[in-house]
Image 1: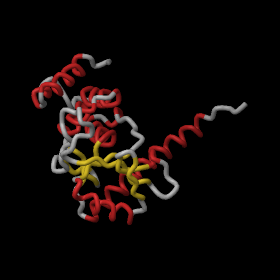
Image 2: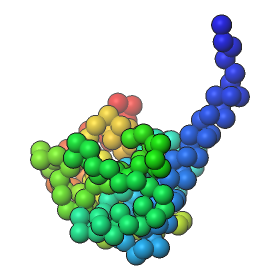
Image 3: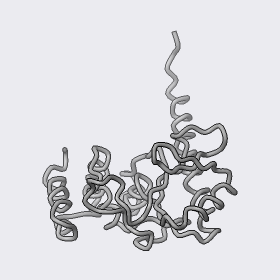
Length: 195
């Protein structure tokens, strides 16, 4: 029977976190160097914003998600391939695998600005112009991140919005910023902080 080694597991967790961070930094640096407009979205965007308010409230994410303008995909592809990423399109999903042996979970995922991720979504993906500079990369503005999270509204999106509420980034004045359906979702999250 194998014994549990907490230190070994902690080392693995640290390596996993570092791999995602490295993928984020390498991909955004390649896009920056090539002058391709982009913005970090998803869990890494939430992490960047939450970190500004309360470093101890940061939650780890497993993937790297970016928004690009569709017309910039070819330029982004050249820049990311020069940085060692491999372009794949599978089931309508644009991704850049982190090397030849990488699995889909080891990828940078791309969605396109101004388009709906799903036809039923209330709002399209924000444009890269709705971004701010954080450290060495660009992140969607807080208002745009919250709008995306309220649009997709999966369990992890709700958790991310609650994290932003908990650290004081989002408050009771925010529902007025969004269309009625998204405002109602945000109000529900504000009213039910524990889910």
